[in-house]
Length: 147
Ligand code: ATP
Ligand code: MG
Image (cartoon, rainbow, N blue to C red; front, side, top):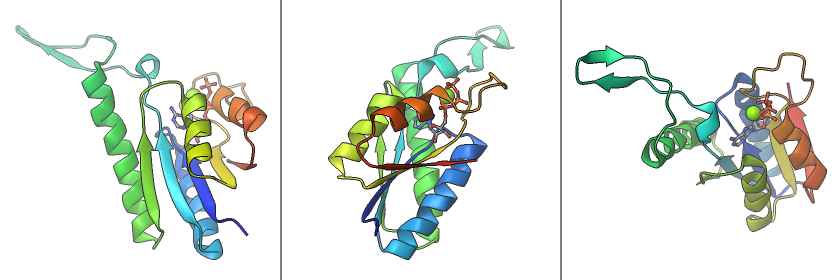
């Protein structure tokens, strides 16, 4: 039934579950799988080493740091999907995650987007995160949220 599946990941446990579910559905349907991640400066904090020794600084990561972390996250996810026997590719671009997930879905003619219900956000009372919510609102294909 599904031919092209996009799974959106942000490094959270929910997103890991979404990846597992997306792999299962891809295999049952013989679909291709695209892993998408949009690293964001706002959600990252880095430990920076100073000249007088190491100290903790809460600072915005550089473009290169974001890209390195982003590449690592999609590579790890792709390795998991490959190990499960999936036909998987990755898409990683710095920027608004909603826009990026929707673009990846459009570019790949996706018929299903799989996401976690929540992500790395810290507002415990939220039932559905804002990325999930907005993607579902604008998507032109089926969406599945995974707990
Ligand atoms: P909020 O971001 O609104 O504070 P949250 O982080 O708990 O809340 P979402 O951001 O909506 O919730 O995360 C839900 C799912 O959306 C994640 O499990 C993941 O599948 C996807 N997602 C979130 N952020 C990104 C991102 N930067 N790149 C790709 N997918 C993402
Ligand atoms: Mg989030």
